[in-house]
Length: 347
Image (cartoon, rainbow, N blue to C red; front, side, top):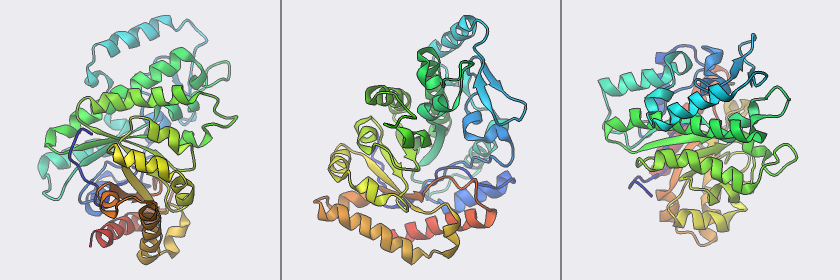
C-alpha cells in the first residue's frame, strides 16, 4: 500500500451527475463529499462527456459517428502509421500528451480551479476517474464487427491510452499534498466469464494491472467500480486498492467472496460500499434503511472473523453507480444521502 489513507466510512462518488451547470455540479460534489471530493462527469452538457467518448482523445483511428454518441475504430485503411505515432508519444512517458481537454471534462477543470482557490482542511483525499480499459475496448467495434477487446493491437493501445489518462489526472490532483485515488470504472466486467466476454482471467487482470501500475508507481491509490455482479475474486486478485460494488442490489453476491475479501483487506485493500441506490428507488428510501442494510453487511464480515476496526478503516461509502441518468432531484438526493450516511457511520 502506497499511502496511510484510512477509509473510516468517508464518502466519495462514482462520478456522473445529470446537471448542465458545471459550478452547481461542483458545489454538490464538494459539499456532499467533504472528505473525498471527486470531479463531476456531465454527459448532459455534451456527448463528449459520455464515458466511452470522454477518454478516446488520442486513440489512433477513432471515429465518432454523426450522431455524436457512437464511436468505433476505423481500420479499413492502413493503421500502421497511426499506431506507430501513438507508441512514439506513449514512450515519451509524458502524461500531458494524453490530457483530457476541457470540452470532454468540464468538471475536472472546475475542480482544479476550486482546489487552487481554496483547498479545504476537511479533505483527506481527492478522487478522479477514467473508463476502464476492458469497458472501453469492449465498447469500440472495428470494421469487421468485433470489438477492440479481441484485437491484440488495439486492446494494447487502449490499455496504454487509459493508463496515461489515469496518470495525467493523478499528476494534476497530486499537487495538493493529499492522497489521490483514481478509479478505472468497469461496468463491462458484469459480462466477464459469459459468452459476451471471452477473454481469459489472466488477460483481464493484466489489462487492469497496467492501468493500476501507472498510478501506484507514483504513490497513488486505485479503484475499480463495477455496478453489477462479476467475478469479484478476479478483481481482488488484481493489484487494485479499492473494490467498488453495488452494495444496495448486490451485497449478498459480493459477500459470498468473504474469504477473498479477508485476504484482500489483509493485503491493504479497501471496500467502497455503493449502498445508496442510483435508481428511482432513491425517492422512497431513508438513511435509516441504508444504515441498517450497511450494518448487516459489516456484521456479516465480522461474523466471518474480520475485525470491525479493520472493516471501518478500510471502508468508503458511495452511491451504487453514477447518477448521470437520474433526474436532478433524484441525483441530489443520492448525494445528500451519501453524505448523511457517512456522517451516521462515523458517529
